[in-house]
Length: 603
Image (cartoon, rainbow, N blue to C red; front, side, top):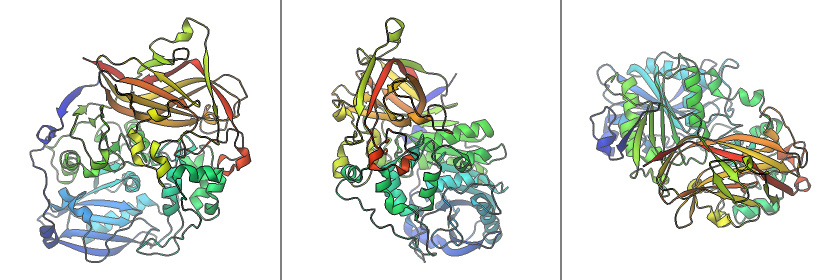
């Protein structure tokens, strides 16, 4: 039985075993009390990593704890100037005399060696875990530390924080992976369930993935010609006619893109890049942080958390989830002062009086959250003994009524079907503003989807308006009964909160290709007009459906260009499909289909 204790978001009620006020940083004072040095720390193979160390000018008795972030991004500003992160994301630590360390991972910016995206751990003589070990060893010998080190980071630095937890250095006591990558094939960033998240891959990957020519303060990477978005995002990709054409400038120039094309099912290439396969009981204390509206890495935090519980157990494992976008928690004083800092203080300062609940949660409600500013003033924080993981309540798709019902209609009558034509030349836009934007907009994660409801290539099912509050916290599972005229198609399921005024706030949405219905390790194309089942999970949710609101479900086969259009044929490789490979498909959704929601009715 999950125990829930509610707390208001007022800071005085949010204290978790800590009697301290929020930190106000005096920038001038920090600059006087801290020194910066830039060093090249040698690894065991002779490669040197560019590192910026901010340390107290007057070391305190017994030494200082170390808080470190390892990153593939720049350590700007170089030279004597201090990073602005000292006064925000690391404010609690410099205010208390910690040593703050930034390091560029091997092969990035001024660090030597070769960069490999999501480099596997435990293969060869050196990897990102051994680099973390060697760095800690150097810091202990060359800085006035208290012998305790913590690592944190968000997004890619969150991935490197996860890998740091595998380094097995005895001085590493606490790690906080925030929005960490979990599995690059099944979720996060460039792929969801094996489907290409095209807009993200194109815009972010075009700058991040090209190989480095030489060490440089500006990255030193080759530039890709012909990758500029002309006009708006939707029309730009539609005019290309295929994924192959859109990404042609990447061919033979971006190693990771070539690897993605070479591994279109879940094989050892992807498995080796999942750090969770190395999780074990000897890992340090870990606090996973995730955002409920994180457009980049919504999958990774809960995936990593569950894998930790399986491998490490529940001791010293914590989870924090809130209504944030990607990295939005870094702007939340409540999180930084009352959740993150107590975690590190407990393990790096020996503050055993500071206790944390296993799960700290702030669910979203009936207003679009200002997640870009860390806006968490409304609603209530909850302390949970564990994240809900049990079976939920099934709502069946009533095809005749286009409704969501507690009982399956096909139990009492012959099953019906509702259908649509999925046309690659006219895909459903993922967001209303896509026609004026050149990049994917993070606000789509909580956007109004009612504007597409009248399209003929979308099915809409509605529940009854709520009389009481419905608490939805935990996993979402979908089971579809289907027929299609094509060998393959994508199924995009959107769960929405329809307000009394008709707006439909997106709570969760994701894609599942039919070709992976029998497992991600094989391609299983569909026989035309044969019935088949497709079951999959959406990312977990934490949302309160308020009285007068109702749940709405959209089922569609395109969400463009957030998700690359499925060719809906059987090309040898979906990422190399040309314009002539894209075909229309007739889709039928049958009664007996369902969505399982983690629902608790509240008075």
